[in-house]
Picture 1 (tube, one colour):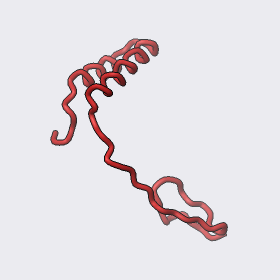
Picture 2 (spheres, rainbow, N blue to C red):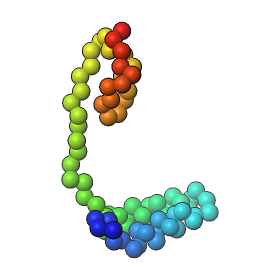
Picture 3 (tube, one colour):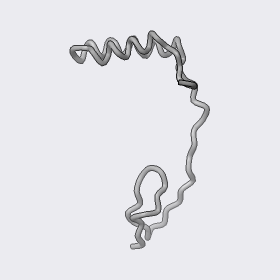
Picture 4 (cartoon, rainbow, N blue to C red):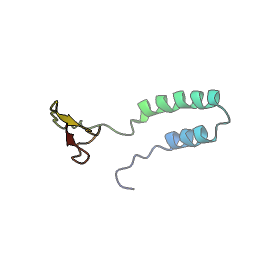
Length: 75
């Protein structure tokens, strides 16, 4: 698909990790996968987005994460 990296070695290691019989084998493959990701660089983050948020003392039940205005009450 357009925009997805073409990294056959990473895909092969990912499949081996899924098929690994135990935790030590998964850990070994995870290290190999990380090293290969440093070589292939499958993506480059272009930035971060922070939403400015302010809270008052008398507001309760604010949900964490993306700002949502339901479930909010004045105490």
